[in-house]
Image 1 (cartoon, rainbow, N blue to C red):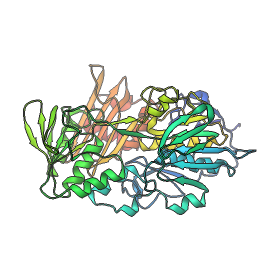
Image 2 (image 1 turned 120 degrees about the horizontal axis):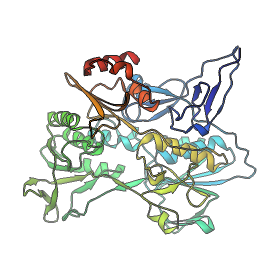
Image 3 (image 1 turned 60 degrees about the vertical axis):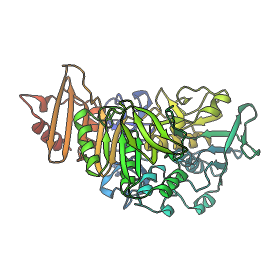
Image 4 (image 1 turned 90 degrees about the vertical axis):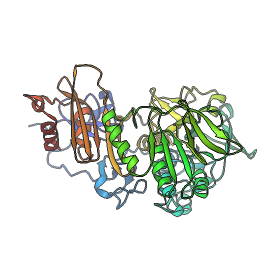
Length: 499
């Protein structure tokens, strides 16, 4: 009897069993044309050794044969990690040393540097970062602000790592201009650096709405380490602080400040928290958690102006309400750092537009992470940034690896609460079936259409997240669990049995 056919995803290494390749890769979202036949002799089917682990809370990817004891980004334990297939590797035979310059010291930039070095021992790799500190886990800034971790735990790698891997790290080095025709970068200190391949990983900057008074003293943003340190110098018990923006950063920053005894008021323009990820019921339950930490939460708040003298003294809402504020923290989202790319003539929309190989409109320039836009999507999260950086690093060294997207879902830990959201969580007509379940402090919502799970929210207990993600990505029929007169409890029980 012939061996069963297997199909290898050429993007992420996932192996699918069946007579035909899947429509979509379960792991990375690659389409069927990116699969190739992969035969394994029946007499020898060794187990695949785990090499990469993804944190289910923050998407951090750990490389090793076992998960770390603690996630260095969010502090989750090893039980919160799932096995990922290793990134595919190609052996690159570089005849002459490539000068690869990477602009940006975030996770996408460092992943690019590491992948380029693995792909080519001959490459000359330079990383430029505008900050003075060693590249660090940006997601850890709110934990640093809360006092949960110390400054010495922030860096991703010690200085010796860059020396050991022959990666030239230049700090601080701020990019002033890109000259694609000359393959040259101009830096703020009036020096220049030439490249053969350039990887732009400049990330994003905080979005500050045009609110009257926003330029007063003691109005802050939180994107880089020095901003966190400025906040720490200013906080004191009893200080009135208004946080504008109820996204993930706003929630975590509000919780961090409250731990210092600061009187925090959190303002959100929508009627509930995280309206993209949560429905009203889940958002209001999360608000209960926020208020339980001593934080005043005001939904539907529209800011009119920031009042004061040289310093901010209060926040005035459109309703006329005046909120005392000796400090204001703006957490209203981010915008990609595309200004220099536009000046250089690269194609830019919301981010720098890249193809499936993460090349920009200039084939010698790549863009990854928050600064890039792939097929209309700017991800803005850790896992895609790390994945894109690795692929661009290998391609810059001479490989030919494709990135076709990653299924979008959110599994987070917000103020100590596990939260998972995927798919359509806002059904808008009667063709959807929605089942909601509340048990003690936990909430879950399951949305079905045409016998298929199309969306879900888990708040408080996210153990079903992997099962739900597979059902949605594989478009698995759920007809059996929907027969008869199902209720939320029976649906939850059936889904638990699948896991």
